Image (cartoon, rainbow, N blue to C red; front, side, top):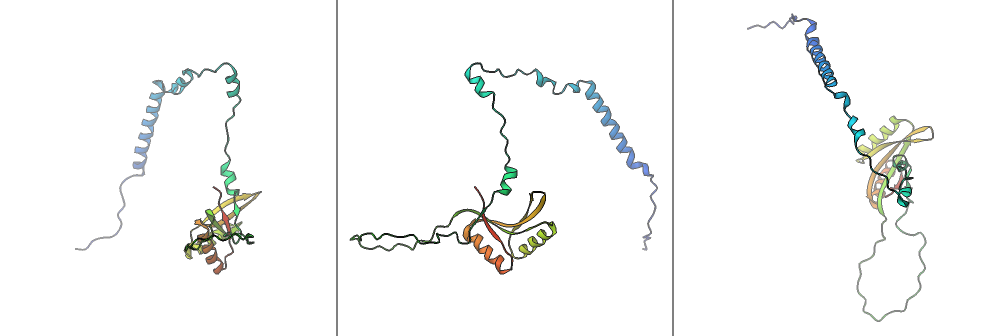
Length: 197
């Protein structure tokens, strides 16, 4: 059977949406007025009636009064707390002088070769710093295509706002160094930094 797909006009008027809204608004006003008349305006006034703690008398009272509230500024200090890591942090650049020791008459035992200690901590790579967010976002997308997790940090230096593109954090120096090599191969200069505690 054939069907008519022509749109039919609705016979309802435009007031149907306003009626429930206005009735709900009116009921809300009536309820608020009822709470006010019933004593709701006194909410919070009972706090002033609570007993206040007594102040101690004697030498201890004078020591505890001048204490001021400590204020923490770590939100502004942490973005500026960075430690640059030298290119080769795995060991000293000049070999230490050794004094010869007298040989002991023991049988030599084989010890595994010692690996140089790697510095513990968390490391990040700063791949760029841009004045425009769009440039920073483009680099972040390029790094994502390389398989590196990058983030953009907004920093204000003086009156200028910079957008830093950072890769990491990495739990070890070796992983950060490996990521830095990958960036260098992709022609992206980066700065290796050690995060504070």
